[in-house]
Image 1 (tube, helix red, strand yellow):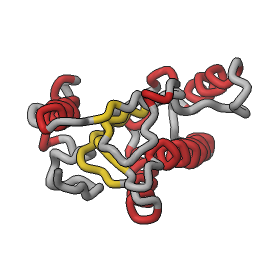
Image 2: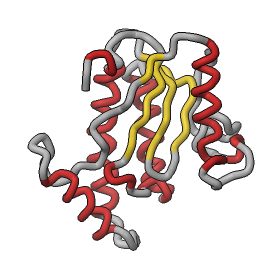
Image 3: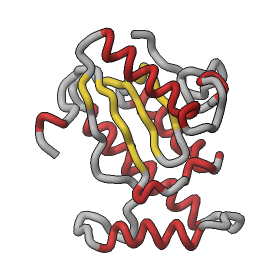
Length: 176
């Protein structure tokens, strides 16, 4: 990834984290809970400031910053730790009907990548987009909040619980 695409200063960024091969892991609450718990940990312990977010079934969009200019590092650590935790949960879940298939897909994604051991859970890139203006921030926030509506999961953004658009959101966000 080019330096221009890295979130390596304290700016505000729109970031997308996508599961390898777009596997619908977060259609299961148990795996979504791991993701949410680890985002909260990063907020409390790593200085991750989240302004808007949505967890979809196979990706997450976030508007965030990290004031020490370490957003890429925090997200890299988050992805690594979360992947290990979710893979462990999948492996140990005797009720997971898709276990063999999911593990096969993640193993296949790691097969041709030297930097991975047995599995590759996340796609490599975060696609960071720096947000410079109020208009772009508003456009990206609307995009995030309307993602579940566009996908046909809910009729209103506030109905999707794993989103900053919901009053029931498990993750507290900051105001712009």
